Image 1: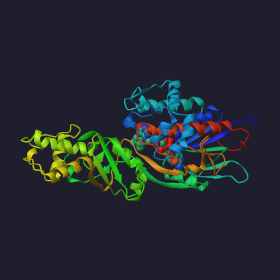
Image 2: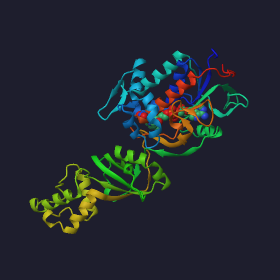
Image 3: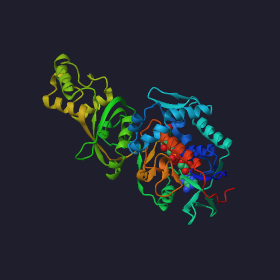
Length: 425
Ligand SMILES: Cc1cc2nc3c(=O)[nH]c(=O)nc-3n(C[C@H](O)[C@H](O)[C@H](O)COP(=O)(O)OP(=O)(O)OC[C@H]3O[C@@H](n4cnc5c(N)ncnc54)[C@H](O)[C@@H]3O)c2cc1C
């Protein structure tokens, strides 16, 4: 068994690349981290609105995986080895404490993503990770008759290494390198986006929100997918709809919506906690109990914002001077439909600036999730968003980057006895 350290190259200085590099170095490997941008950890810096939502306070792997529209099953075992509790402990060991918000999202107590950036940079530096920024990788290949990799930089310079970690996020060059080493790339598509819904019912209501709304994507599939129906807060925007329920639906529906060029119908239930018959019965009761009151000025449901109520009434031609007593049976039925299953057309995908991920990437069947080693190319490791894994908002995307990066780093650094050629500085 060799006593010399393995030479490891990590391509990509994001969350996954840093965790992989640090873990491999902790195992005794000589690690070089190559980052094409001038500054590494760009996404960590801008994440969580500048606060970095590091992880989520969900400690049961079986529950945790439910937050991944793609990759959940593959991550189950990985989370039993490194999960949010380990993330919290890891950062605490470096002196960074995380706090939990009421919805389970976890942030550094500084509320500043720079804390996380500095923590990762300092840990990497103290271990001796060689961080080369402004160094893009053009291509990678296996050197024939050896188990080494040749890594060609954009400058034309060639480096070699014993172990290679691809952690290039959703950058096309990373997919290309993975492909060249034998991997299949599941078509990358955006996830976590808002909906463009140019509908008169929403016009002039930008900023209006409701805490609990149910949105169902009408996708025409024979077998209904329960994940294409989501509940949560919804925010009306200038161009359509946003908010947690919409983002969740966009993640679970990312493929369906992508395949339909982001044109689809949704059904909105503004009163998901009431049965349709309860809504009908309350409206019927109002006809006698509030008989002489104006419908427009007397919304029965506190969950429905007043301006939205008035807009929904307008959509079914209920005049602002109409009194409850004069509401016809037909109008009452129309109102029930508007409140519980109003149909809206999505015409496109908006851009959500807070968080955005790519679904698709390396086919997970081609990866050994105990070690994150490629099943196609020995000594190649894969971590982070380059994989066909994506989570909903809440810290789940970083958690999968920490987990897969850490597992890859551990495994890369742990394996000894390989040919130690190479020309790294
Ligand atoms: C605005 C925004 C906010 C977000 N907020 C959160 C949040 O709060 N919580 C959360 O969990 N998730 C959040 N996410 C998602 C999260 O940032 C990503 O899931 C995560 O960064 C993925 O990490 P990664 O290391 O796999 O990829 P990346 O962070 O994308 O890192 C990949 C790195 O590889 C480099 N690279 C690519 N190609 C090459 C090459 N050929 N040579 C050398 N280097 C290369 C890139 O420059 C990049 O630095 C957010 C995303 C965005 C865009």
